[in-house]
Every structure is written in C-alpha cells, then in structure tokens.
Figure (cartoon, rainbow, N blue to C red):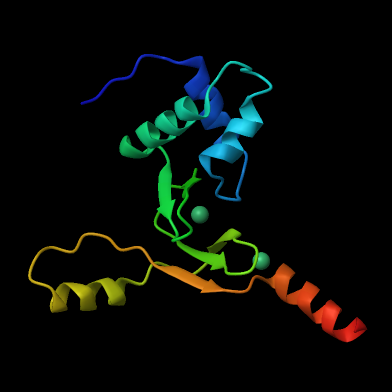
Length: 136
Ligand code: ZN
Ligand code: MN
C-alpha cells in the first residue's frame, strides 16, 4: 500500500475541499488556500488532488468541460452539470442498481461501478432567464 509523508499543504487542500459542496476545480482550491500558503503553485494543488483521488480519499469528476472537478463525498452518487453556468451539482437519486445490472448483462467483462452525469439548466439559471423574459 502506498503511504504518504504528512504534508501540511495536502492537509490544507483536504480541509478546503471538505468545506465545499460545489465540486471545485484545482484552480478554485488553489485560490482558496493561497492565503495560507502564498508560495504554493497550482501544479502542486493539482498533483495533490490527483494523488488524493488515486488513494480514494476524494472523488475526481470528469464532467465534459475539460476541467477535473473534485468531490469530498466519495460515496456513489450522481451529478448534474448546468449547460449555462457550468455548475456541478449533486443530483440526489439513489444508486441505480438495475442500470448496473443491465450493463453487466450486456457486457462480457465485469462491471463494478458506473458514473452518470445529467445535463441541463440549473434552477438559478432557469429563474434568471425567466426574470429576463418577464421584464423584457
Ligand atoms: Zn446554471
Ligand atoms: Mn458530489
């Protein structure tokens, strides 16, 4: 098993991620912890987040916007991505075991997990669009 040397920077990255539910990118965490570690580089933040995801301590989300997002919640759950503002939100649907079962039936290898991303317009964006429409 991979063991890691204690790192204050990495602890701070974990603390920052654990306080947020907005699935931040490495850039966002970098902005957050730069006050505490003015000399830290974006590359260091990115490498540590990837390392933490390899260790299963955080979850990496690849939502299709070209940026990796990170999630402190490592339990299986689904996400919604707003096409308008790019927000990555939790979509509280229980894990769809039937879907995974169907995938296993259709596939010759072993299916052990799945990820689903839902896309559309978030409630905030939909509301602001409605406000614009109603005032014009
Ligand atoms: Zn939105
Ligand atoms: Mn999440």
